[in-house]
Image (cartoon, rainbow, N blue to C red):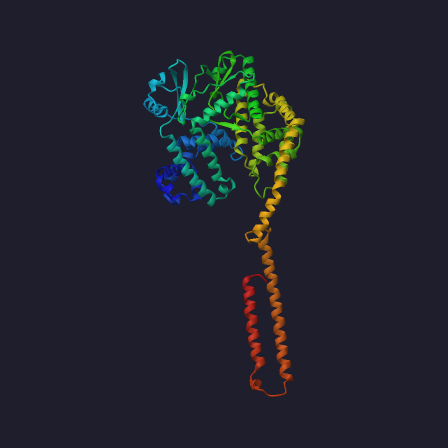
Length: 560
């Protein structure tokens, strides 16, 4: 931890000062990070001038853009976290752009030759020196192989891995400090969130992973009728830092291209993307997580070229079922189904007001119950659902968030191309087909068999586990931890009762001793050596001191 701060102190200072500059000094104060590095004495004046007229969402976006690639990616991933951030921040982070300059062709050539272990002239007939696309992690050049095939070569930025790893070290340190020093750090499991982000961005740094994603989704869509084309991966010229793909010649599906497509073709393209996306989610379990127009090309015959599989989502069976059940619950006015689905995928914190949670879901359910399918906006419904989970501090897994982000992005594309189309209405038959398949006799039998197998393994393990438990108990190696609600209160009451009981016993003993001394002295007719000793008076004084000492001790403890 201290080594991290020492090694990266200049970058640490840059991050802290940038946060302060854009009006987030209160976060620095709450975490007390400033104690470690000091603060520019002019920073407060600078802060007030810069952020006075800007919204918090805009200021967060500016922080990310100013701090570079790692934080741009952090902001882009944060834009999927509808369960944590309100819509004003999400909408601003969705506007984050990779506004970075390209790096030189000399660097491009150096990286390609270093990665592919041969001179660039041995691989390509030609490489365009100017990139056709530039992003925070890499840039793309059009090239032509020795065979004459046109290809797109994506090359990772020089030293980007080291830059990102430095920032990740700092983010982990800040997350650790925040969890230790703030309630919001604990509530949102900040260290775990940074860990998820680190996994995501490291995956994007590995172009081999992107190549595998591309090939897998291409294979899944190969036997469908959707007019979608995904480029081939040229594996001979693909490494962790260089990915070579078949070049697709088309126009990006932006608003500019949109003007040259007739209405019928627009509806066909939008319908194709909706059906293909739901096929990927419900049938394949892996899908393109960022289906915005910039990642789509309009090819000949109105087919769609799908690009950039650096960010993909994976929908497990449990995620698929929860997603469908939430939609069914909204349509059928079944709060229990929705709550059960959210419980199955979300982390519900201790102390959540379940009754209030049910009431909020009731309100959401009533909002959509009487709305026809053709009028339901899926993106709005998803955002409303996340507003409820955010209100109750329920964290949703990344897989479900990526699914939600993909559908919200897709709905934006559909509204641009064909505003009259409705995602829910088009996807409804696919949802019904999914449910029919999931609850078919064959599938139910298979699931029952799998469950029975799991339970049978548990039953078979019981004798062994029991034997192990008894053996450990016999050897004195068993520790039993019991948690009793409000145990401290119970112990305090018990302590109070015992003090009062002690007080009563002492009073009784004091009385018995005094009576004994008096009776004994009156019955004793013979003089002894102790006859002249004032035993009653001494006994009385000793007993009085003991009584006062105990009384003071009890009252000092405050438990009487």
